[in-house]
Amino acid sequence: MSAEHNVVAVTVISTIDGCPEEIFFIPSARQNDPVLVKLHTWSCNKNDEIANIHELHDLTGWNIIAPEFRGPNLVGNPRAKQACASKLAKQDILDAVHTIMKQYALTSQQIFLFGGSGGGHMALMMAAYAPTFWTAIAAWCPVTDLNDKGIWAQCTDIGRDHAAFHEHVLACCGRNARARSPISHIDEIARATVYLFHGNKDISVPFLAHSETFYHTLIRKHPSAEVYLQIFNGGHEIHNAETLAVFKRYLPIEDNSTLENLSG
Image (cartoon, rainbow, N blue to C red; front, side):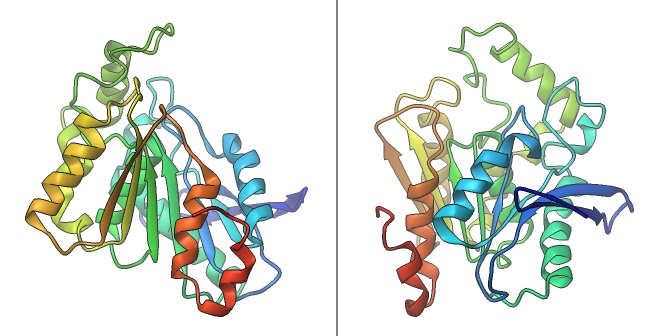
């Protein structure tokens, strides 16, 4: 292990294929403080989460984990087939939490999961993979159906259009994109506690085709599920403080004071 600016790099051994995966971790001052797992976005990796995990730790003092889960969901990722919610990628996240809990003797009963965009997609897939493991999950502007032709359709950046998105999905999932889409795992996700946030002006991942369709499909089938949707006035955005304001609802009363400055 090595530490820099209180971020610790920890090697986690996959319990499926034995592959060593490096993650980042910021420890709390107390062993019983909550654990928050922050997932990287579609085109990024854990290195792009440094600023976020610092901010999340500054706001809470909690244990913060940034796992890698086989890298970005891109054609250029040499491990693309292992990324994008493969079983290996999903198990990497659980292995990261179990390793940190054991190595640092953490005793918290509150384990939160947070991701946006591609990380929101992965957060929902983790809700399906281990629905009762997480205290609560926040997914911002998530991709819920990898086959939707509206993803990146309105983007004008070079290499960021639906044709490029389709190529990335093909590299990661082959012809099995539906199985790696949250919309295919409604029954499992309904067993988790999930908060969906999506901007009504999102041109990357249209909210109507994704969060709204996903939510109503799930709630129609599972009306008592603890799955909630907030459509906000904004775009393809991820907000740390609003997420923490939701997560604080699940803390013991005596711990709520640590987050009393957050909105919500």
